[in-house]
Image 1 (cartoon, rainbow over the protein chains, first blue to last red):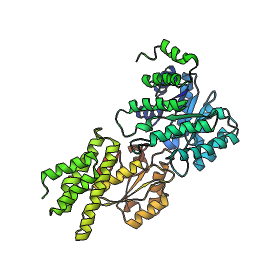
Image 2: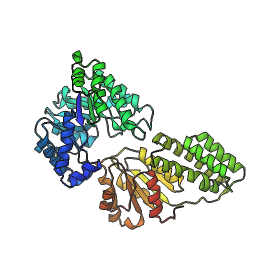
Image 3: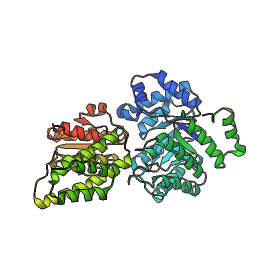
Length: 265
Length: 219
């Protein structure tokens, strides 16, 4: 299981403000707390700034990696921003994300081709957002095969089947879950990951729904999550769910988590 | 004259999201001789505003807002049908063109905005999602709208809202329309920076801002 800490995102007000104020101290503290809570990658996003995005995301990478010894998930659809971030990045980054949208696909593919980067492949195309399992599989097929042709190892591909809100269509949850199952069956060795918060958009008690949905997705084989790692119940659920889903040999992670007090919530 | 009981029932139908009950109530009241315009102004419009307010306060949730807006649309259709038969002209607060910008396929929020604007007496041309800036301007001219509202849900598509401002200026049309922007990554700062006339936080705010832009006294 790979955990990407999602908190350093400029669309969150405090982060956006900290970026404008060049408040490195605050960014560092958010990076540190996510890292200590178990994030494998620290997501950095400066998307709301549009014109200054490349400069700001580069600065975020620098500040985050001064504080923690973890790779970043470079969260942008813009090749200019990703390239700027890469000039500063140490280690092997995650690129979040490529999609089948023509412009995004064509401009990002050369950046990831032949690299060891982890690549999130988002199931979205110029035809819009996929609604059914078949829509998602069709996009995933083109993305995965495109990445393989460009010498990206299957073990570095994380397909994101795209979570959509159940508040607008009751079948969006099962559509996602069944897609995870089908994608890992069809492309042996590929990973799946997602952000969760869309699932509960427009509903109360969002955190509770997000936590449960993570467990349901893990049971289908999902092995990457873009989440708030400071959500202790989410992290505990995730470790327990992996053990219950048969992906924790000798329950070693579960027991380690127990000894670290992760289940004392 | 609309009885207080009808006002309350209208509210309950919308809050429950019951399209059938809302339509049957509307038909019943109109068949009973009430003025359809009054029925809208005194019962259903305050009711949908109440739904919008409660949604804004976190007491009602998105599926409830969607079903309420759906019920409201059905009632509006009934009323319009009666009105077109009796040739009374329905009050129109103003005409608004709504679109999600080019490259952006999100439309949940935009459709909610459209429903609430219609429910509040605006004439709305929702021309869809992933719409070219040129086409937005073209359609705005063609429908002779008062306001152009654009939605952008991605940081990558926000620049299209700026492009719209520039295209309007280049064509000498900027003074002809008011512009309103919205969408998750859009901020008041962005609106101000690109020179849009208003920023709307959500659908209810969109109605408020549209009324302000057209200087309509809010009841």
